Amino acid sequence: MIAQLIDGPLWYFSLTVFVLGVLWRLFMILRAGVKKDLAVPRDGSGAGALRAIFSRFVPERTVRRHGKVQLIAGYMFHLGLFALLFLARPHVDFFAERMTGFGWWSMPYWAFIVAAEIAFAGLIMLWLYRLLNPVTRLLSSADDYVGTVLVFLVMLSGCLALAQSVEALRLTHLLLVEMLLIYFPFSSLMHAFTFAFSRGYTGATMGRKGIRA
Image 1 (cartoon, rainbow, N blue to C red):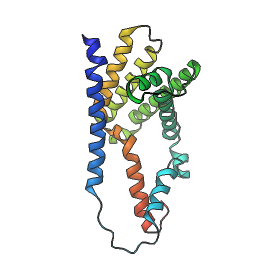
Image 2 (cartoon, rainbow, N blue to C red):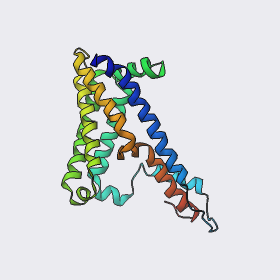
Image 3 (cartoon, rainbow, N blue to C red):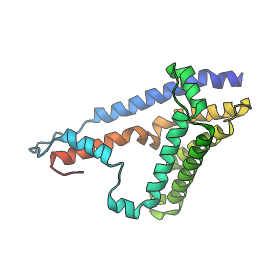
C-alpha cells in the first residue's frame, strides 16, 4: 500500500506542486515588474542582460582570489549533481518511462561514482563553509540548512539504491525526492531558476547606463 502510494499518487502530486510552484514564483517575479527608467539609455539593455547572465559563470578576479572555497566547491557540487541527475542510468530510464518517452546517453558505473564523490565533496565543503564562516553563518537561515540536508539525503539514498536490488532503498530515495520537490518552490533552492532573472536584471540595468556589469 505504502509502496504504491510513493510510486504513484505521491510522485505525481509532488511533481505537480513542483511545476506549479516554480511557475507561480517566476510569474510573481515577472508580475512585479520594474520602475520605468526615464534616463536616456547609453547602450542596449538586452545585450547587458545576456552578458551578465553568461559572464558570471566566470567570476571576477577578486572573487577568484578571495572566494576560492565557494567557487571550487560550488562548481564541484553543481556539476556533479547535474551529472547524477541527468546522466545516471537509473534516472535516464526513469525519465524515459515516466516523463519524456525517450532516453539518452548515460554514464558508465565508474563515472557515476566519480560524479557522486565530487558532488558530495562540494556539498560538504559548502555546508562547512556556511557553518564555520561567521559572515555566512550570520546570513544563513533555517531554510538554507533544510535544503542542504534534503539534497544530501536524496543523493545518499540514491547512491545506496543504485544497485536497485533492494526495493525499500529505491522507495526511500523516491520518497525523499518527492519531499524535495514539494519543498523546492518555497525555498532558497529556487535560485536554480531565479539566478537568470537576477543576473539579467542587473545586467540590463547597468547596460542602459553604459556599464559592463
